Image (cartoon, rainbow, N blue to C red):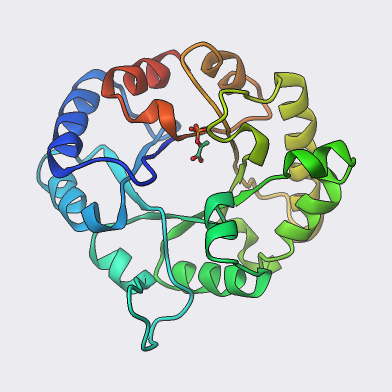
Length: 242
Ligand code: PEP
């Protein structure tokens, strides 16, 4: 799966043009889904367009609140996301962990709430540069994975996104990605007590130059792309050569 995370970018016009171009130039199949995550205010617009003309593209949200009901100004719950046509939701992105001060308890509630509405969480984990340099990566990842109730693990997609690689132009080396993905997959196997497959995708400065090498690894089940996903031509090329 290739996931486009637009962060706080875009407009109705850009979304329509992007979907027009991308849907005409990529070949989507069951093994390689194309998921677009626009800003929250464009979800309903995007969901409606998908239903009308772009069935192959799937809709994901960048945000979801942890409860269905609360007097929360600015809140968006999982029921609203489902109503807008979302099938996926990004939870635990490092930018939101910092900005919203999300604890494991909050993240766990977000996971439960979204899975309860049949949304598929893309759960982001990853270490900061300081944690990497202090050899704490594995401990941090274990701690972050602890937010997922073990009975819900099978319903999640895990996105390994080293914080130091997000938006910096410095992707992790393939050998490092493979080492960490193997570690995560082993942890998931132990935690879920099952051999059922849980996808682990990579995110962090994926671009036209590095996408093929990263995606072709058998340890990598997909890509989560921020900056390079905004331009329809670049995203299409990444999708097609990955
Ligand atoms: C992201 O926002 O999740 C991300 C990976 O961004 P970028 O591709 O720009 O590093």
